[in-house]
Length: 310
Length: 330
Image 1: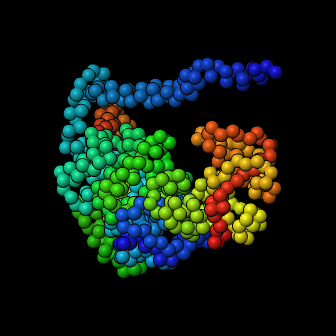
Image 2 (image 1 turned 120 degrees about the vertical axis):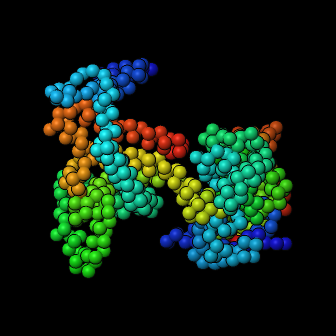
Image 3 (image 1 turned 30 degrees about the horizontal axis):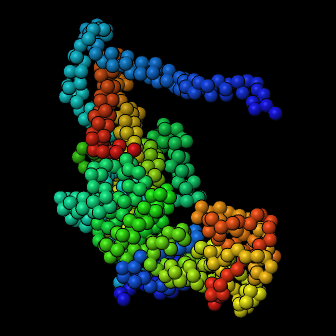
């Protein structure tokens, strides 16, 4: 009998080719996504960046394709700064809200849920993602409206004064929940919550039980173990989740359009500037702001040691 | 004698599984105590009962006389060296060792000084700045040891401490652990499934089988006078002889054991034990010769240098009557 088996055709020839040239298979596998990311995504990003250094002729409304920082200077107008700061505060508070709500759920799922309960957890977290984002936002508009479920429940339980007191808080209150920043915040938190829970759960699942036991064994209380072991080890997941909630909130222009006040957010500003106003350079400059903020955020997280446990 | 750890009829059941079933034992202060048994025999659960990660279903555990039924792990003056070491990957070695002192509120300078001292004891000074991921398996184990010992526990628990190390390192660590224990005078309780480890390191040991203690004693007692068939077979793979066989070779009608090294080759005619050779296993220091006596296989350890029989050849085994150990319970 021969030491080499007979070739069985194309499959064997390809396997042989990839065995002789291991990099060839890798190249074939990653080149389509690389072309997509490199050309389509980074290309458009570069185009965006270039546009933001152009300006608009104030009389003719025509884009002047010459390098200038004038458009960026415009961002510092009080009206535009308002938009940026408002968006930043909303993104930060949505992220905190999501993190606080997500942690117990993720912790339960990672530590205690088994079998059917684990399936129920995944289903419960994913199910809202199956329905259209617009449908959910409009549903929330009805829930939060003055005549909605919350207002009705408050009336039925005699807690209307509490609801009114909350709505009377200056800055975040308003005529009804659906026309207040508080309402915008609630809907943002609801819509992005799964994006916080899933990475958190994945990172908590990777913390070995023996490490928590070691901490207790060495004399730590539950609180000390949480602060010095659980949280630092789960931090990459928390950061990953916060990147989702933070950047998704910063770029969204539909939720604040449907729920909230008439005050604008960055997403709305970009939408209006590139559409009706036709000011592409300023729209591009606005679009660069979230990118810069995310870069600063990641740099800070890195310095705080968030990625040490990766 | 002060009793460091005492179990009084302790049981731990997981549903229908009786992981630990009515165990009573006493571990003397300053002892190097081994819990030996196959996997699933309840030895690790016993260790976790001492550290507090498991609560007994029934019975009482006392540590230095104090009932610890309601004491959580963080308030027991007992520390554990975990099987997977469980070092914190986000802290460097010095902070890992100083962790127990940190959570007790010892100042940074003081705790790092004591961590450095303890690292010197386990011969890892100069390694304080490294991350656990940069250390070898043996070094990680020393860090785990230092991290436990820096708290000056009254009892140190070791869960399969040498399991993850290769043979050479394991032998070196056995000597080191033993020397360290003698120097510090702390009670060591360690869990192992390796009978050689238990016999060579412990000064007292408990053999576990199916959640119960099969025998407690010194290594010599357990090895030379196994109480049950299980102990005879598990510790030192002794020949276990049924009652009729014991009677045939001149003993009472009871189960008995014969150590392979107590048997020597003899002519088949007139030997108490005789039969064809079924297997020869070379062990370096000698050869294990197995014969079939009809109903039972019996093995003898023949030291290197002596002539060996061929497979299938009829041989006999001779022994001194004093070496036949009759077991009082089977």
